[in-house]
Image (tube, rainbow, N blue to C red; front, side):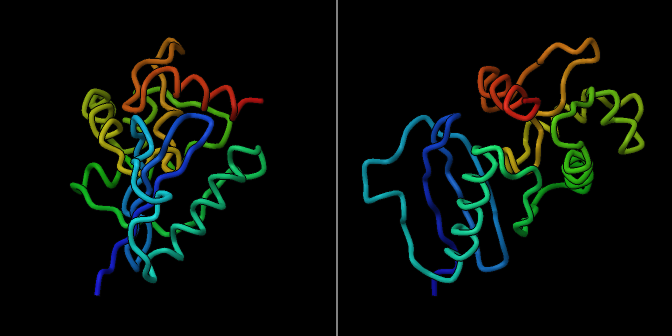
Length: 159
């Protein structure tokens, strides 16, 4: 039995690739375009229930009706990465933290560069809000999904 499912959805910030297994969401990633096969549904099994819930929550988020995602995440990474990703979920909707603040939150006050690297490897874009991390001077900084997407997400959340 195949225990994974994937889906591609269009959003205001571009196409997202969603991947889940029967335990929860494995990944949410930005992709350049929707695949040309099917309607974005590649497998049909019980993992699709998580994708259905996530797609609904993403639609609510983009409509301005959802601030906190409650789908279960399957988190795979080093202990440090998991610690950083957990801390990212503590950043309140509509707010930002600096890389330094995030480093302090995970008890690595001088480790903001390592925190930035872990942040950039976040497998759950938008759900784990790595876009809410900015430079110490308040400038946007980088974003694995692209700076324009980061600006859009921050503007969306602050309105």
